[in-house]
Amino acid sequence: MKNNRPDWDSYFMEIARIVSMRSTCLRRNVGAVIVKDKRILSTGYNGAPSGLKHCLEVSCLRERMKIASGERHELCRGLHAEQNAIIQAAYHGVSISGAHLYCTHLPCSICIKMLINAGIKEVCYVDGYPDELSMGLIDESGILLKKVDVRTHSTRPAQKGAAARTATKQKASTRSR
Image 1 (cartoon, rainbow, N blue to C red):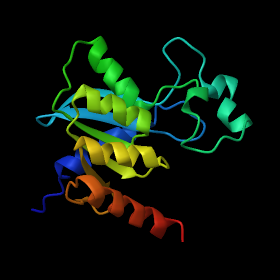
Image 2 (image 1 turned 90 degrees about the horizontal axis):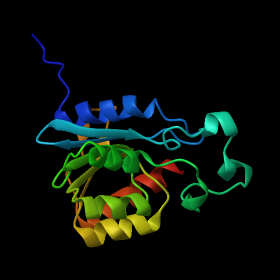
Image 3 (image 1 turned 180 degrees about the vertical axis):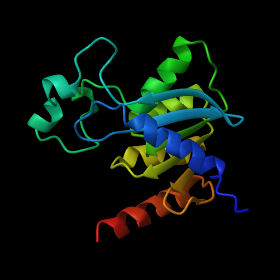
């Protein structure tokens, strides 16, 4: 009998993809899952704070102003998926120190700073994000960075520093051709 069970990285990344379906962002649907010892601690998706109108209802200011992706984060009414996952853990009193983040996209520089201070040790992602500062902060922090290929259920080994940056840049340049 053939075993069709996904490996752990594929399993948690698929959950992050499903979480992203709750996103209310008009530009990019992002999902995040924080995991420790193969247990889900928290999830988050990008969208407006609880109780506030979201972009599906009031439109997107960044879109109207033609602001490029990865720039002027302060003009977005929504929180990023990673921020919401951290907030949910804090709200429920769950420590995420030493945990891993599974996210559909590479976190931006704001989210990376929060993840560093929250004690996240590894970031697994599928798609890149246009934020050079983010990669520099990852290099400096020592957070392990792992790209997950959900199509083949394979994972590139976790990388630190310049190796992670080179692998991400190579993937981005291949995609833009």
